[in-house]
Image (tube, rainbow, N blue to C red; front, side, top):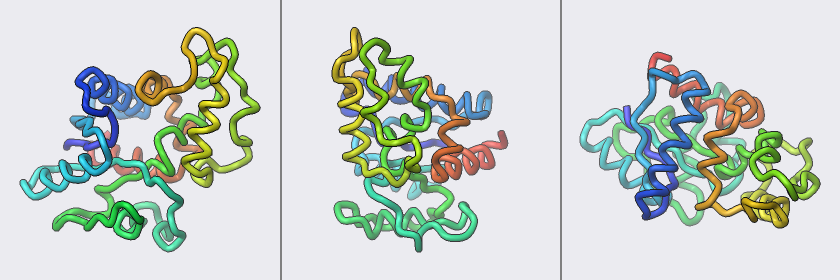
Length: 209
């Protein structure tokens, strides 16, 4: 099984860091010894295209990308393995992606609304990671479900919360995102994000973990 993920940019060093971040997160989530191969694909379109190529070649593959936007209620009804991420990606302006022949909804997974949304589920790790100067009160209220917070609000809040942090400095995707991902408590993430729980649960099922 190969997991095609959005992230890692064009540089080899960041792609290595992306793979390491997801690997450490998933190992802590209960997949140690049962891990998929992880492909850091850079931009979301590249992840989709690489996934489509794998499916066309008859390979066992899964896709993980940001949803970029809220999920319509019609696309997340019933049991989580019946949700319709492909419908979301087809309908979202800017994507319009078709489900490749042979792919199932259980093969497609979304970080809602972006990977950084997961960080809001583990604020203790955020605070520990950035250290001196971190401002908790710049983050959205913990009472707000993480998947309901707009991507722009998530990113802006992280930048505002870390504006005066030393020595790490203000949050930057390339500098910090995958290092933070590796430190998150997956139990907190899946408790806060139903789509993250769906991803981990289905991946465990597929890998026999």
